[in-house]
Image (cartoon, rainbow, N blue to C red; front, side, top):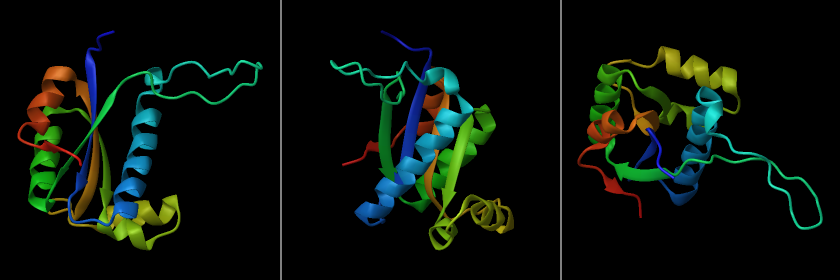
Length: 136
């Protein structure tokens, strides 16, 4: 199956493993919220028990330093793709409202990004993430 859109997560390369996993998990919820059409049907096991649904579209995870994340952010803004940001200050909060408070108070031209979720037309996303390495 081919998709017209692409989903990419970019996580900062200087984070601890738990932080990287945490960031990608939160970014994925943002992408799913912004594009609920990516969600497939619920899973049902052989005994008929129903489980939750997941994205039916593949997702790629990339890594880079702060400067690379800031470049990706600028490119994504220029191309008007869906952007889900996660900044370093969010690690010190414990709930959504506090996350939004630290985000709105951050310098929008110099965000201390630790992760980005990007979704948009495949060619646009490819241009936004050009030059990044896959995580791992």
